[in-house]
Length: 433
Image (spheres, rainbow, N blue to C red):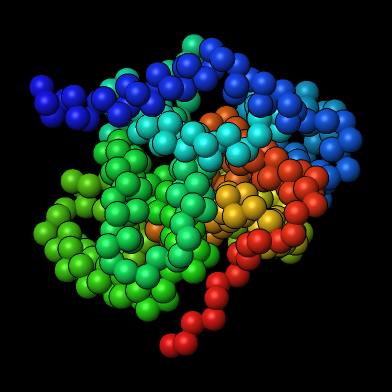
């Protein structure tokens, strides 16, 4: 009983204090006092939002191409194309876009510094959502329990928990007076971070868990952590992982592990013609688009023939290149580079440390998603089931990404509204190696 009292008493006091403040209207009055004002539109970072909406609309077109049915000749007009092809998935994604934009607007009404004040509650909510997922989610492909049924659809809590992870991690790093310089500090922070990561791995959803690791790694790096300490950690990780990976590859049959099969396919796709069909066909489709692509709803396209599984979700970049060619794929990559560069530039200009860490956390999340997704489609990285931000079909990821952009805009508006002198730099200090 003493053990349970020691564990749950702080949690009970935290929820009691939060409920008391809500009853006293402190949280509500604070939000109303700092609500989004019409004059704040001039502080909005429009290039960021326009880029995101543009990528998402382009993604809807690619989803339409990916879910098209086989044709013998290319439709002459857009109207004929819409009449002969299913618009279910693009229509759903458009509805999800409108709902996600509404969530983005709502995020603007809530001062982001409230998250800093209640970061412990956000951490407990994060862990709670992931534990509920393990209990309620149904087993899906790869024995994964990641989706919770909501009405006629489903929702992936671990996606939304990415935003909670960023808000909590930013608060932890922002309150530090000095960068991490020793093993003790790093171990304490990493222990807290690995609790939600382990819960995601238990689903098991290794791809999403790697996103959590990437966000944490970015926050550790930009906080000014000793570069020598980071190097030692990477060396230890490599030393530990190498024998484990060697043992797994030599003592486990690929048929026994869904994820091991993906890794072996990455190393030797020719040895697994059936299992590697998705990867091989995706690369063939990617290269068959040529310079300008085959166009949408093209006869004989891999998209219309259904040769690529998950072509409207994880492997949609193959459809982008098949439909719009090297030019289309290059323009999409250029849009991502602009988006990421914009986020890093905004983070460098934010005066508030907490706000700057939020923006860098969002940038780290998008960097990992873009690099891993495109990398696995072209064969440079193993397949992990990571969606392409704002392009892949799916409501959970789109909602998470839009909320993340809303958080960035919230930080930017508050920073541009303030006239306080700059007190924080996202750039790492010079370290003499």
